[in-house]
Structures are given as C-alpha cells and as structure tokens.
Length: 288
Image 1: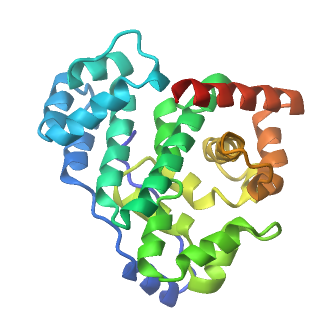
Image 2 (image 1 turned 180 degrees about the horizontal axis):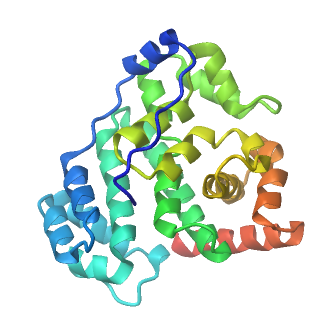
Image 3 (image 1 turned 120 degrees about the horizontal axis):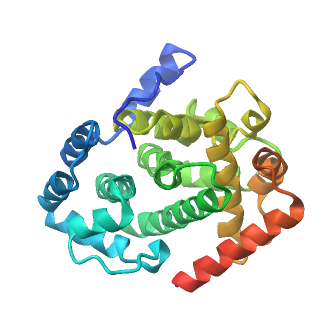
C-alpha cells in the first residue's frame, strides 16, 4: 500500500470529463488519511497504526473478524488490532481496513450491495491466493485490487437508473469489451470511475491503472504496459474464472476473451491453470 497518487486519469474530451465529475466519488475517509500518513513514514509504528484504527470501534471489530478468518490462516487468533498487525503485517492489515472503509463509504440499496461485496471479497481472496502461489504480486496489492476493481459498478448504478440492465448486457456480450458497452451508453465506464476513486483515495498507482485496464485484455500482450499492472489484470481473469466455477456456472465470456492471454502472461499451461483453479475452489469451500 502506498500514499503515492495514481497518474492522471485520461479523458478524451471535456464532455466526458464533466460527466465523470457528475458521478459522486466518495471522499477519502479521514481514517485512511491518518493511516496512510503513518505508512508513509520511514519506519511505520504498528502501535501508532493500532491506535489510529482503534479510534473507530466498528472498524476495529470488523478488522479483527477479517484477520481471524480461516482464509488468512494465522496460527493464533488475534485478540487486539495490534496483535492482528503483528500476525498479518502492516500492509495486509492496511489493505483489509481500506476495503472495510470502501464498504462503509459506498452507498446503494443494501440487498444489491451485499451481493456486490460478497463477490468483491471472493475476488480479493482469489487474487491473494493466486499471487502467493505464483509469487508475482504483493498480496496486499492483490487484495486491494481485487476489492476495488469493480468499485465503479455501484457508483454508476447510483448515477444511471438503467445501469443494471447495461451491466447485464455487458456480462452477456461474447464479443465486445465489457467497458465498450458502458462507454457506448454513458461515455464512461466502471473501470474509469474505479480508477478515479483509487487515485482520489491515494491507492497504489499499480492498483489504479490495473483497475482502469482490467477488462482490456489487449494489454496482456503489450510490453509497453508495466508488467506489474499486466500481472494484476491476468490474475483478475483467473479470479473471475474461479468465482464462476464456485457458483456452478459453465460459461464465462470474460474468460473466453482474456483467459488465453492471461495464462500466457503468467506462464501457465492448460494443466497448471486447471490445477490452480481446483486448488482455489478447494480453498473457497474450506472457508465456507
């Protein structure tokens, strides 16, 4: 996790830029500002971080619950935030807290967002799992990207009454880029909005640019795109395939569009990919 802001978000024209400004981007929470200020120090103090988090009792309890979940597999149960930081590490706890703050900040119909956050949590878990197995991305960066890559979806849902229909249409389009369907209707898309939020919240530039590009699988074969960003995008394709398998769905258009390129970038054979997805599926079921 870093306090460095992402590069400027590209926009094609003033109309598009004005539209993006009309979409409510939640401001960076003050708790996150304080946390990032401590993390920016040369030697961040776990005790100071615990004190910052401890100022919000609700966040402290939610963080402890996450830190002690089976997915993170800590040998001991943390009884305090400071213990959780010592067990999991500063960066991982910061990533977990950032996700909790996002959930608190994004407004919407509770029933709709419960399903959204459940999928986001699964994606984040899948990205942490695959990043550790393949040793190609820091787990905290992978976790943050997994939680935030579709963060623009509820924001667009709040802005456009027909967005749910657009989202379903894009999900079931076998040929076009997911974001192209959104661009055609709204002159913007959830990846661009998510990138803007990530930048405004001071998240890692790798995270913000991976959010922007996570449906554009052409970047996976583009050496001019930073390798760390391409790796996150490739891992997200694997994660979506894993979630689709968990849900018992046989068809994944995103996998059809980007699966080959993702495996090629990650250096995975067909058999290795299948083994990795099977391990991920077992992990999902173990945690249930």
